[in-house]
Length: 412
Image 1 (cartoon, rainbow, N blue to C red):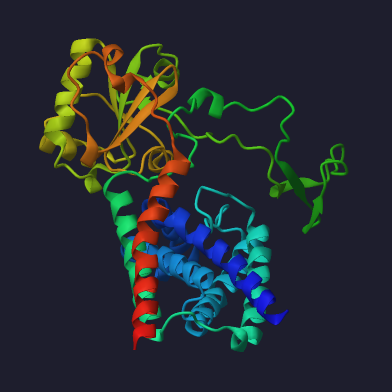
Image 2: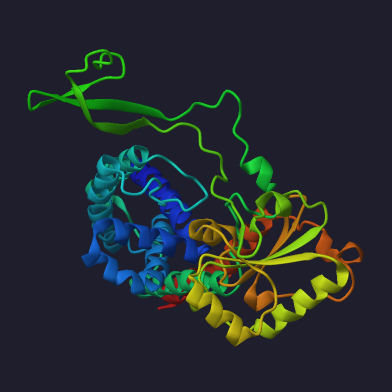
């Protein structure tokens, strides 16, 4: 019974940690942005560490993934349990603070794959802590099936595999796109609010003063007909968050023509959107290729806009360095970071639907009109296939390490 409980406990924790680590490993920039949000919320002292957020995000997701894999395979159980306990010793009080103060609306513990409330995140961590305690008490019942040296080799291999996966997804695009701007998503539909959607619920207090004494009133009992009371202030507190559409901050403000959001979204033809949340941080090595795509768009009658949240000085510097002639538009920085995990990245739009997206390292060469090419088709997501490929690649090396280690141990 004890062995079965131990097996079930480590399989449950293994699955949770693998899922949490994997969805962050395939989207390292998304996890980086979330870590930056945490550091900003913690104050100026922590905000100065934003420069190491990217490396930390890759390392933390790798540690999570390794913990999960070790639990699933029963590798280095004692050390893995202690590392998991230290990990949760940080995360549990952190998520309690987030649940109480709500400095960020989404903890990001499961990336964009599964968004849960801050309180649900805290209680999830409490459940993990309980299962960890069970594993601690039953560790003596576990017997490794390979030698200690082989287990360490497997752990190091899993760590480097996760880091390599994150680096690949950073240099291209995330293997899995859970965001509302994924290929095939319609932006207008993503902004739609149903008629029966629940609105935000607020607690509103009105502060009035009389004879030097201030008093709070509700909207129902404030002294509306008593002129002896003087209005001082209004306090509004969000009680319950209502329905929020997946896309809620998408606007395009042209530097020359003003708001062109509807013009872009209602265009029945193709539009290219060059997305760069910050021109000062953009990779300019593909500037000539982007200019060529703009020329191609003009020749074929397609719209081409560059979307950024950069300040005017950075915009002027970008135009000078790249010799860009395409129109520049302003869009919310968080929206731009969400649309595509590349700076810059290219998006193809038609009828408000995202047809395709490209990292600056993977810009295609457009020659013939889109209608006659394969670029006009929305690529299939093939999530199961991609997950299977990653799993097979890992298992080829991981199982080979465990198998050869076991054979070598028996031989000796």
